[in-house]
Length: 459
Image (cartoon, rainbow, N blue to C red; front, side, top):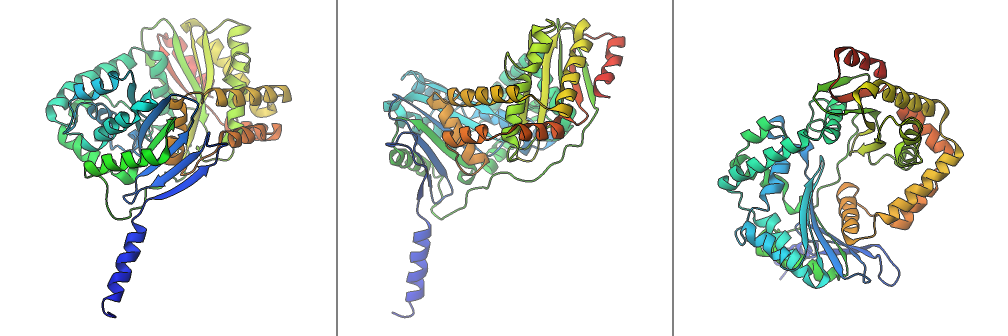
């Protein structure tokens, strides 16, 4: 009896550890907006947001892998893999996958970013079990055959060509390269023609096995759903595929670190026969965990986030120099970018750049007016709420929050954080970010003298 006691105690402790843990992260009123999280023994996290007033549900799986996890030789592998998971599993063909969701009027898609990948399906609430089964099967049972790799290679090369044909899109990839160079964050998510042509089924399959472990995944669902039912269905699907460990495993932690971007005054130009010149003028921004991100959001909105913004008024409304002009931020785990985009006639590119540079310098030195800040806060609060009006947006919010931050923030708390931004907060972040020497990316048909003058914008 005594000799067996330590073994019994050890087994009991192990069993107690290897159980699902459920938490209520955000408590809504009468269950509406309640966010719950369950962590299964194998490290798989499941987060849900309940919204009983709708008749739809969106189910997604987020993978802690993006193009920044690729070596130079594997550039484009994450996006390639996203395509291949739709090509078939040991249980379903590619046609079976698409027809199952089509047959119930659902929508199914995926997207790859620099730090994560997401696969999702939006269906009627009654069809949620089907969506869970199909998406989980894709994520756990992909066969990744060489013949599928060869077929899909053509589609991905066409996607790269399509991006190249859209300079208004391509210039943002160029700006990332200008700012971050030949690094994982500076390379294109799609890869290049050379890297995509070099990828094989074996290399992609190894990449898949390394990055699609349950500890690297977050399941997210939002809509007219029951949390415990989602947990049961997801657990059954992963266990059926043999993808869930029976022992306790810790989920991978959110990315961290601190990368300082020291780029300043860099200029990259691609000479291309287009009707417009497409430019992005910008500088290092903030990491997504930086507490100043709320003030940065207000600053970005006031500068180039709407029709009343400074850049829109100065470049388009007063002078008619561009149809599209805006500012934006890109935030990663350890760094960020701030950019101003404009598309204009090649003959007007220097005028547009001078106005943009002057406005950035002006705001860096003197800040924004209180009226501009108040208007931007109101705009940002309204757009935040309006952007969460469907189950797909809710699923994106809770899934990305769990993967990237490891916690959840209620909409009310987000609105409170935005409303708490002061003029001094905005002026301080403007001095820090906009006061830096910018870099510039340009795609367009610029003559030699025009191209030579571009350095003036970053001097």
